[in-house]
Image (cartoon, rainbow, N blue to C red):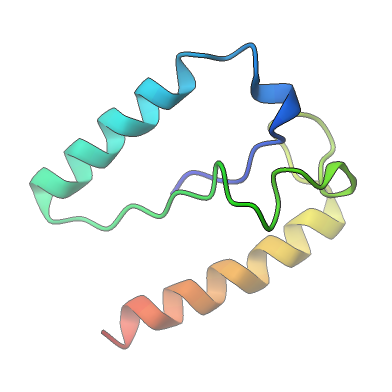
Length: 78
């Protein structure tokens, strides 16, 4: 799982997309699920959700946890 990242703060990290793509390839080749929230529009442009560019604050963590739990439930039911 890749957590949400604050979009504007991630601009200098151009290699991050390459890392995510590699993880997706590995997950696919092993039959694993990989949930990528790093560019999820529900979070990445909402600065009020972030402590810094890569860490959610309490509000962001609460919102993300709800989303993540729904997605995990969906994976378990499929």
